Image (cartoon, rainbow, N blue to C red; front, side):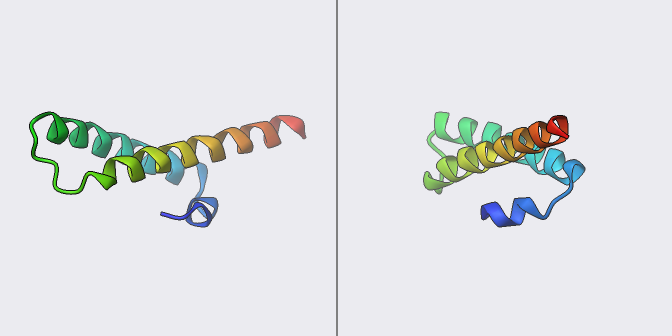
Length: 67
C-alpha cells in the first residue's frame, strides 16, 4: 500500500492496519521457517508497510504535541 493510502486513514484505522500487518508478518515468518513461502518479496513489503504506519503515527503524535 502506498504511503498516501495510509495518510487518509484515521488513527483507529492505522492501528487496525498495523495489527493486521503484524499478524501477516508472523504468518510469513512461520511459512519461511517451514519453506512454504510462496512469495518471498511479501516479507519485505509487509515490513516496510509496518514502518510506514509507525512513522506516520509518530509524525501525528509529534504534530499533536507541538500544538
